[in-house]
Amino acid sequence: MTSDGTKFCVAIPSNYVEEKYRRFACGTNAADYTRLRKEMTNNDSQSKQVRAFSSLRPQHFTDALLMREAKPDETTTYLQSEIYQEETDTTKPSTASARVIRGYYLLDELKKKDNGELEISRRFWFDRVGGIRLARQQIFDNKSAIESDIGYGAIQQFGADRAVSLPVKVEVTRPKEKYKVSLTYQSPQTVTIGQVFDPQVFQLINKWNLPEVKLDETPTK
Image (cartoon, rainbow, N blue to C red; front, side, top):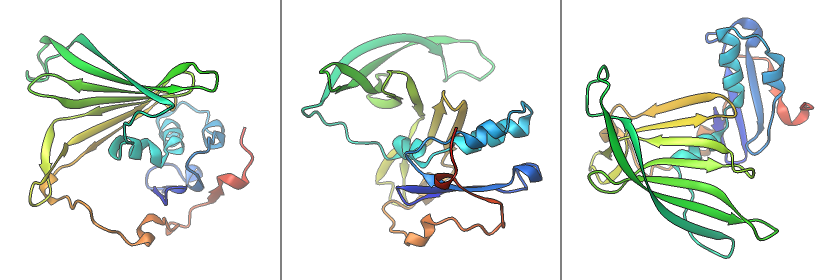
């Protein structure tokens, strides 16, 4: 999948799914397309995988990795609170059933609607154990339902000079689309920060000769 910030293309090659599900789809980032998912109504594992692929959007990942600035203005207010909750103790072996009480600072981003009411837009969870670390980001729709639930793992130094500290694992959960994707950096020190890429890198070519679907030209249901 690639995107230029407005349009996106996603390929589903035949080596991942059955021949009849091969697709090369292009559309608009902000649009909502349901046609591919509705065409595949079977509940077998491959159909579920294809429906998940058809739900992917570039902004699902850019919202997690390139976080929008948190800044108060005339329509944006922030509210801070604290919470304690019981969780699995991740410092113990995965087979252990130990539990721990962990504390978080919550920062809620509230947007003012046209009628003057406030609705939640984002919620940031900051882990208080061993310092302050962003552990989670939740993004809400205009009905205050969760669109994205993003978890951030342990912090490591990135780049050859180790000048940038970032989470080594990011997990994106999309409840509406019913999929979860985990991104893990295997070698953070080899990551290049601030590299300028040629615009062609963000153009996906249909080298597989897949059947093409232009979503903006196809009626959605």
